[in-house]
Image (cartoon, one colour):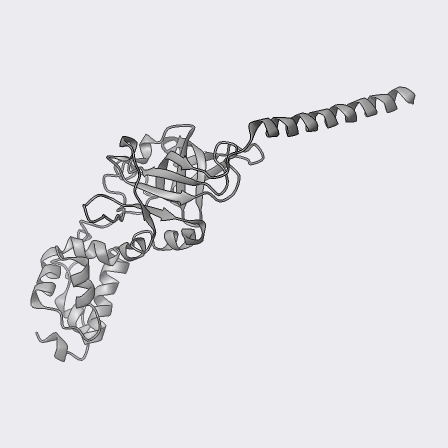
Amino acid sequence: MDIASDSNSDSFRERIGYFHKEYLGMPQYVFAESIGLGQERVRKSLMPGKQPTAEFFEAIFTQYPNLNPDWIFTGRGAMLHSKEENLAPYIIPEPHKTTSEQVSGKNLRVLCITNDSSGNENVEVVNTKAAASYIDNIQEPQFLSTLPKISLPGNQFRGGTFRAFEVKGNSMEPTIQQGSWVIGQYIQDWHTLKDDYIYIIVMQDAILIKRVLNRIDNRQGLVLKSDNREYENKNIDIDEVRELWLLKAEMRYNFKNPSKEMYVQLQHLMADVEDIKNQLSMTNNQ
């Protein structure tokens, strides 16, 4: 079929987009991987005015034989030849599906990474201004490529995927300072979370740095703890979590003077003692 001459040439692109985004739940780069073509080739094939090759459609219908070509090309008939639900071997299940296999990471989520010219994984840097965009584009390689990147020395940063996040807020002080940077190692298997270790938790609406109590098996959730005692524990459901990174290092620029802090605490203590003495004196005079 000559797709370029089809009056539905723009609509078929929309139908392919609907199929992989809405039905399969796949971003374009995962769909491209699933049909054995590169993301850039798929992106160009779906650009308005471009004429996809026969090989492009052959790859789609070979991988997804239940997909109805007539529906793709013309919009007529059902999207699928049958109602079988086995079309998506590369589909990314939602994180809140907390069966043992899914939470263990065997079938759970796809992490985007980028590589340097030598083929080594980059360490992307996510500052507080980019946090919201990071959450919204967490599976988009194009966005990831725009983030600043650093390299880290030492063997402790080998054999894993690492990412840097800027610290916002003082909930983890004095352990982690506001405005510093933390380096996290990506955790694929959420069952391996260790109690009282510090993790970077990428949620649907925020990026938090907390000590974690693993309660996935008991009640499909986590308890988030702050080192700053002014903050209460926070209970979250596992379906609120999108990524987890084990804290491996902190880069800080403000080095506090411990003797000064002790002096301030002593001054506060002396003031409290004076208050108590005054109250006792007032009680004795009554």
